Image: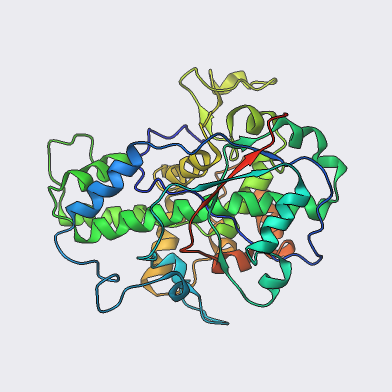
Amino acid sequence: MLRKPQTQLALLAVSVLLLLYAANSQFNPDNSDVVVNTPAPVTSAKVALKNQVNQSKSEPDKIGSAQQRIVAADLATASNSTETQMSFINVSDARPTKAPKEIKINSLDELSSLFDSLNYNTQSWIDGNREVPRLTFESVSERWQETSNNIPVQQKKMVFFRLIAPLILVANENILLERRLIESAPLDDIVLLNIAAKYRIITRLDQTITEQQRQMLLEEIDILPPSLVLAQAAEESGWATSRFTVEGNAFFGQWDFSGNGMIPKQQRKELGNYGLARFDTPLASVEGYMLNLNTNNAYKKLRSLRASLRASNAAITGIELAGTLDKYSERGQAYIDGIRQMIRYNKLDQVDEAYLSDAAPLHLLSSAKQ
């Protein structure tokens, strides 16, 4: 069963990126209103935490030293590679740290024009470009819920994938930064101890962890392939049209037994007093989903398989990890088959090769009229 994640200790308050999705047809938005609703950028404890993480390092980053400073272009995965994707191993040392630039978008035409101006369109993806700009947004508007069925299915999918995938890549970037710290920090480092508590390796902060627990953290804390996350987000949120997605940024159907969740119209009494977890932003929903898969005993098989793939430098794919999600849904194998079919049909495996740009992040603002 899915649970609402604990308050997350995230490492990066940078904005989220926008993923370019390869479709079989061109993206030709109509004049419908934009589908996202975003306030000004939010600053939080994440910024202070990122600074604390950087200060806690006693030696240069293993992959970001003066001799080998990684930039976004270095994250491109070689064509036809069968090894772990570069964006699943490294993060750019030139990643932006400033607040995102606000851009007001009033229609899907304007959104499409923005994509083109950033060389962020179907043709660019077909040409092999996997570097994508960073983007943030706050929530899915009710307008999307009301009108999404009136636009072409292919366009609906592309809007969804392009707005959700950036969140996934940023969440994965944060996880890789956590892994970097876990590998190098002293066992009594307070930031390391907070990470250990977040992932339920320890229950108190007035203790150190062992080398064995450090290795446990490295197995528990790892990326999730964007192909898998996108497929599950589409399945669980009904392409961002569900009541729970619009009301509470719930993209993954995570349960909440605290009494603060959104109550389904047909609640299953045998499961107790539960609801669907609310999240402040779509990014928080993605982070909550990843924390759930990285801590819940129901997904131990996923973490073990992922660790095995990483140890052998094999590709970590959504198709592969989907086979461990028999407990995510009561549908069991049928759910797994559906997720794999969505990945294949929509060519989402290509998204696993995407990586974040070093260019300044963007923050989409929709028109005031909702």
